[in-house]
Length: 417
Image (cartoon, rainbow, N blue to C red):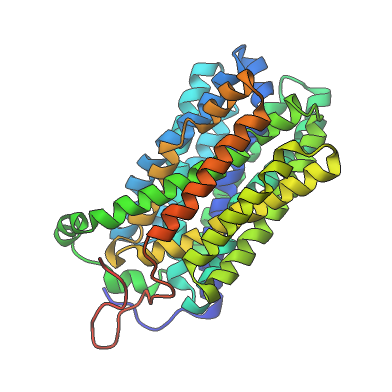
């Protein structure tokens, strides 16, 4: 079915807002656990490492969601699968607040991973197919840093809501954090009322037989994207997931101060994503990613070895400025590399397979942190994977600013190999 006309700027803005807010709320629901590892361990009478494994379960199940929701998005459009996804992960998040024991909580966090895995690919394809190629890098940075904003909002909620409720009802405060995570379901109403399908999806939609048989032709590109996203996920989760634990148990900061320092790092992440996304529009995707990864390596010593709060804040700000600066290029880069008919499926599944392959990174850092120190564990992992990101990006392809639409003569305007 061909689409008629072109999306207005307002409609483009609605699509970008839907993708951005969906990823923001998804990240909020993930990082709520990160801030409450110690609290949840005490409540469920398990070791902290057991709660860390719930993060691993979430990451490991994300490819399932990317697979399911990606197929739906390519076959039936971006809007309805995105609405269903937002409602799904919001409901699961609320149910986490009712978990009676650790086993139920672990299962719910795994189920939540399905929702988290499905959101990114659908939201990114919707937003970037709707936007102008001229602004794709900048909007890519904005879209991806919804993740950092979600982390920041989780820190803010932890510092204000959790701390306040905990003072009066210690056994109830952690549940309130998960109940807040149900609010994103309201986003589905906005998507239903305001968001339109992008023309690119209508133009490249094919019948199910063609879709199913053609997907195997692109496996070399898909494997490269999985490798790239594995390195990227190592870098992101290796510098974020255990950072609050590092601040509290190695640097002995209070929960409130930990939340404040984490918020500073996420301000750096948001600014970095926007800055390097903008730079990628002008200097190219690979150049922007390699530059940010190499600068991140230079900041690692300050990040883990700073001797006072001011320098810890500076180090945290800078590490996430460059790490998430690199990530800010990713939505544009891998959507440009994806075949047109599979843009809902390929980028999201590659992203989430990469996340699943790194699912053990929080547990690994926790084990290394207990034997050495959290700072040394995080630094060793970070330096290794940042170097890996630079190498894999340098050796890979690029399709900078390729059109997502068809040319007037009917030929495909984008890279298909």
